[in-house]
Image 1 (cartoon, one colour):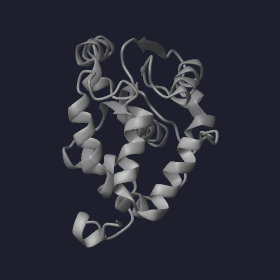
Image 2: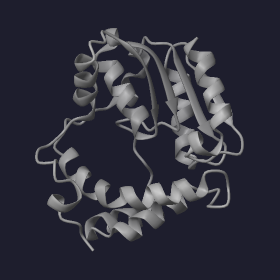
Image 3: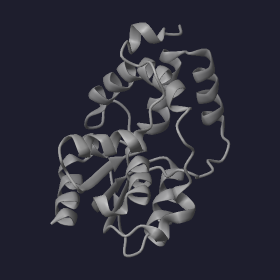
Image 4: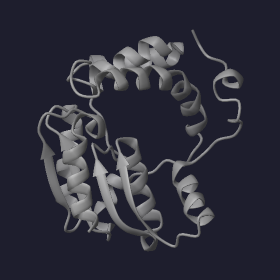
Amino acid sequence: MPVPAHRSLPWLRVAFDDVEDLRAVLDHFGLPSAALVGLSMGGETALDFALAHPGRVDSLGLVGASVSGHHWPPSPETAAYAQARRRGDAAALAELELSVWAAMGRTAPGGELIARMVAENAARRLVSEHFLASAPLRAAESHLRLITAPTLVVHGHRDHPEIATIAHRLAADIPGAHSHLVPDADHYLPLRTPDRLTGLLLAHLS
């Protein structure tokens, strides 16, 4: 069933922009620059921010990242996902999220927490994406060579194949980028292989 905006996200009333929200957070804490680590769409936001505000990014950690401007090939999963979004069907959306992005299932490390998190976020995502649609369209994929921050690209061996395609593109096009493939991990690397991911990020940041 569709979830009314006033019930699921009572504070959300106007369109928002992730890149400008990130800038506002740095400004609020008086940070002229920062090292950014982003998972999935968080990685996409970090890339967009690095292009918009290059002087404010000390380094990038891109984990299972998407990238704005990338054309995702059509598939039965993406078609079903779009239908669930149009229907406002949070339960169907959550099941699709788990089948596509949590390929290792609930019995793998972090599985129960991932399932719970996805279910809780599905309704909120349906509402928030409606407001995000009014944000500026960006196309970082065609401007990756302009990234100046030291960059680490990480993705899981069992992540969605298109994430691997994006990871290879990021590693090839971002000057000096380093890439790591993590075994025994799907899209949820922080919960599947937390120690391995933490080690990679700390080595990169140091």
